[in-house]
Length: 500
Picture 1 (cartoon, rainbow, N blue to C red):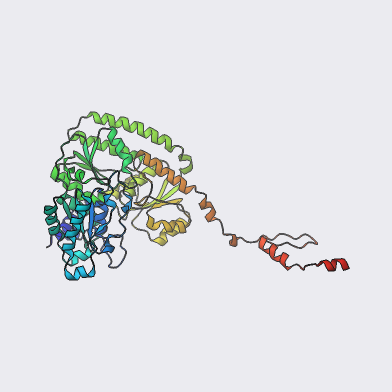
Picture 2: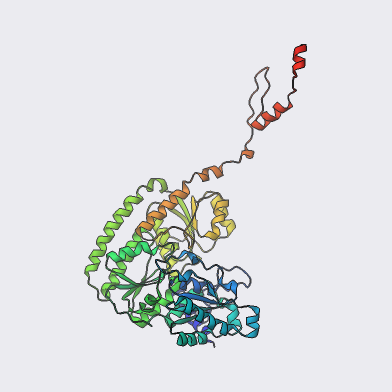
């Protein structure tokens, strides 16, 4: 059995996942993802999932060992933002050709690419990604990375996630395994403190984490590593010295959180920074975990004082939107942590949720939704494009919140739409992020364009038949008819007028 197969089986047998624990041993080995259809657009492969998790480590060079097409569009991957280094936005690929494959030059070309990156960019580390082609021809990227690390004196991390091994979610977890095997724990920090935490599964989309970090700074809590959002290699390598951790997206990195707790005794909890109540609860949980790990208990009182101040400010800002949004109906077509955290956030200001997708949600996510709604009627596993269109065109929702792939369904149904997935341009986390989310919903719903597009087109108007007065002739119905009638009138020449 190959090392990759062993790793995949280990990821599928995840003891921290209740859904996995409820299966028998044979079913557990099949994992949670449906098999991909060859040649179909299945929402991302394992390579794509690994790159999504690792690329936001901003000062690292990400080298794709593959033909050129596998790298694709790497610029601004999923909207993650950086407060400093921009090397992660540069596209590095070995650009294998048919001749390289036939002549067996893949490993040599990879080694030369690593050397070139080291000489020209001098990054603190290089991540090398295997892909379908290089895995099928048998290139041993782990051996090449090990040799390059010894030769050039910098970490060269193999990320063995060829696309054919499974889904994007599997790639997320395998990326976490790569960090555990080759990065985390390799650097010992010299500034360990009692208030150090890790944030796992936070991608800093549109700079969202920058709305939360100032809150932690005011409490004296240091984020040793945010994995992967706006991360630095040395921060990730020393993440094993944190005292506690918060898991934002368990669907992607639950295996990383569990194994860090087992190896380095870093307790974690799953929380959300979406919505006022959830943000406050996340801050409380962080403070409680730190106190259990030896921090001064006075941080609990400081946390409550901060929450009281920030909640008052946020609610005051939101009151201006309540009369305009209360009773409005929202359809959520998303998954994961947003399937429950955004629901709770919107219900806080009086918005009605007519349904939320749970296709990409864990068992724990679904349980939270049940607790919020008190029933399962608002949950749908998956909804076809036709069903979404029918629901929106019939006016069952005032706005749909989803990712970019379903925006055209809402637009075709002449319904407001707002992007809350990775392509969005506005941050929605924390107290200020909640105010921004409500502001964007208000702008979308009350945009005057919707009133205009719902009106009949000019050619759909039926002419109004007016009752003719005695002795009069009805005039033209439209401007075009008037012009046509004037052109058809006989022209009276001057000579005729004189003779008369």
